[in-house]
Length: 65
Image (cartoon, rainbow, N blue to C red; front, side):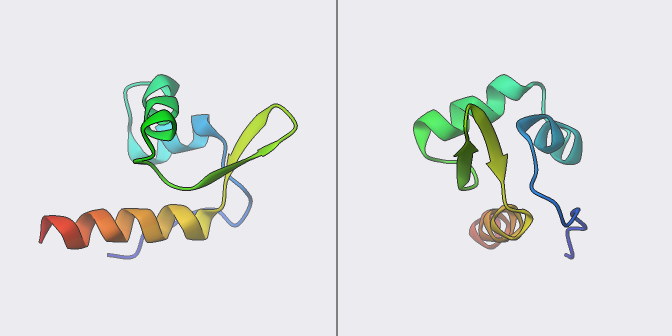
């Protein structure tokens, strides 16, 4: 599967839209539990590298196979 992601850094809201998640709280829960894609802070703002998100999704798909 080729996950088409934008080239700019993603916000938690972007992940909600792209992955059709229930809310941004899901993204923050993943972060607290250490189960979601790797993220980083720019000041107070959480961002995700599209390549890290793609790698994380692929690892989930491989684990489900």
